[in-house]
Structures are given as structure tokens and as C-alpha cells.
Length: 310
Image (cartoon, rainbow, N blue to C red; front, side):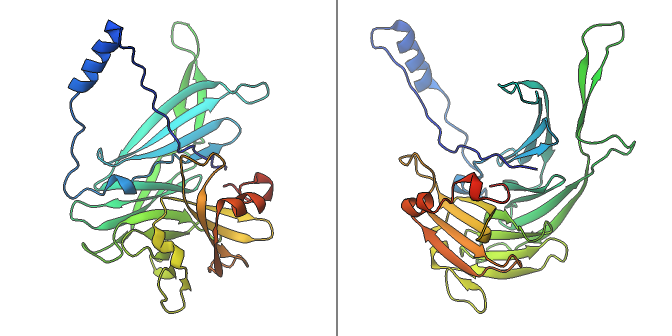
């Protein structure tokens, strides 16, 4: 399983010629476009909505992209089967999609492994929620999932691709916080590299980082911007990072990274916080705040230094 990195920088190009009637008409149409729908009063702010689209690869040629759609209260899975290189370029041979409705506004979806994802969001009553969804590797009839079969239509014609997708067999509610809890909304979910049944949950209210056992549903404070008991004291967590991921580095251990991506910096994240589990036992040992120069010189962005997917 690999997780492709997603480019968060988007460009918007507006072309307009003063002497062109077509350009003037397009401009007039843009002015008359209806305004974007307003957010429900209780909905989570767009700043907490997940921008990245995590990708999981199944075997050599099947990929799944997962994405939250908060206002629609849905999570979408986009599936594609590609040609297997070489030769390049990779070609999408067939694709399909599925949509899962939620009772809350989903703001984060994070794959834990091929057949488990975590979904976080906010209920209409203002309660932060975290769920774990489980999917089966086979259908009830024993067909491997995901898989694609080529079916010949009755009466002849070109083969038609038929998808078999992993059925969802459980949607377990792991945490539901009280409305108005100081921790606030879930800002990020980072898969634990120590165990696929554990995650780190980064909250927006207190900027605390909790270690959550998805089986026992026990939540333990792992790191905090303020000194608190045995939790790792990480003042930089207070910055409220909008991008988060897990990666294992040779010689450094399990690393949990928090970054803000700046459009004026071409080489990658700026001001990156790294929480480190050096002995890989599931407990955070130390943290480092990296500037752009350190990110480059120490090879944090070099795939050759990464043991697992970034």
C-alpha cells in the first residue's frame, strides 16, 4: 500500500481581452453568477476541511482516492484501474466511484490500511466525532475486492469492465465529544506507525495531540503545547498546522509531521514540526521544528531516507 502525495497548490488563470465581445460577455456572466451557498451556522469552518486526497494502491494497477464533502455530508471513494508500466505514460483503463453518507459533517478521512479508514467531523449539535470504517477483502460470495472483470455483453460487442468493491462491514463510533468541549474540532488524524489500530488525533481547540486506541476507545494525551503531566511538551503545536502525515525515517524512527504549505515556496513545506518516536514503541520522545533550510539539508523530503510511505 502506498499513499501518493497530493499537490496542495492550485492556480487560477483569468484571461480577458478588452476588445473582445466574447471576453466581455464572459465577464458579465461571472458577475451575474449566484453567490456560493452560505454555511450552516453549526457547520465546521472551511479552514478545518481536508484539502489533500489520500490515495491507496491495491496491487499493481488499482487505486482508490478518498475525499470528504462536508456540506453534502458524504465521503467519496474514487476508484481507477490503470495500465501497468512500462510503458509510460500510465493510462486509466476504467474507473468507478461510490459515496457514503454520514450523519455529521465529515472534515477528515484518513486510510489506516487497505481496509480501514478513519473519518472525523462535527455533528449538528457541535460535537466532535471520530469513526473507524472497516471493509471486507472479499464479497459474501468470495469474490476478491477490489477487482475488475471484463464481461462480454450478451449479443456480442466490446468487453465491459465490471467492478467488485470492498463492502463496508462496520462503521464504529470511536469518540463523540461533548458539545463545547475545550478540545474542539478534530484538526487532523495521523495513523500510528506502531499499530494500525491506533491513531494520533490533533484537536483545533486546544491544539493537543491525543493517542487514541481504536479498539478500546481509550484516549491519552500524547503531546501538548502546554506542559501537562507526562505528555510531551511541544509548544509549536499551538501554531495550528493544516497538513499532517506519518512517515518512518531510517535512523530517526517513527515521525509525525505537521506543516503549513506556502505558495511562495517552491521546494516544499515551510516551518515543519516533527514529533518523533525514536524507539518505535508508540510513545512520542521528542520534537523538532524545521525551517526550510533544515528540511532540505537534512533530507526530510528525500524518499531515499524514508522507510515507509510519506
